[in-house]
Length: 223
Image (cartoon, rainbow, N blue to C red; front, side, top):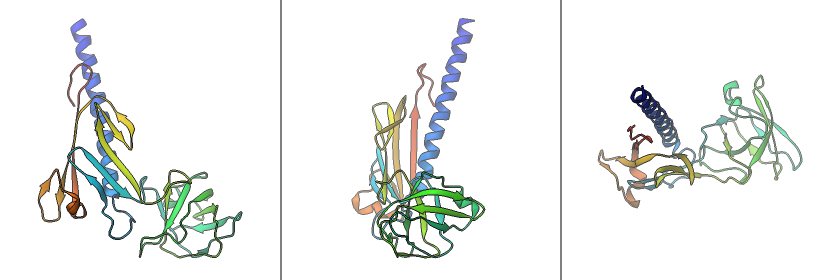
């Protein structure tokens, strides 16, 4: 009975570890796909690429964004503006209290270097009501992109870093999972070669990232 119970407990720990590793792998995969999104021209989507550290640049860390569908002018301080987005699904990415920044795709710059507060979302519109515009009269156009950011102090692009610290995977210094024995990255370059040390001059030619994560449960069951 004791052996059976111990074996069952070990299996549960292994399953839990595998699920944890799968969640982390999926998160890294999503953020690798967003690397380079709406970052200034000439800036590499991969900021740091080594065998043990991956740092990405993106303007949409969360992947939550909406395309503006109708032109509008920024209001004066203390006023709100209703912004039409392209679809109800895009409106669903946002909620009152979120902060956004707005990027112009052709040159990947921001008409106003500022964050704006979402004060209301109307899915039927579909519209978002924004406030906190400090400069009035700035023209925004159909096709401009709103991206959700963490808070009013966030600037673009943002960096996302993954590395192994002891037995824990950290994302921007925050622990995601413990019990990890190995986290490694390799990089597929534009010329078809693969390396785990692309060098600063090759960061711009990275086309894919291969991630390997190994963990071990408390009872030494590997995932």
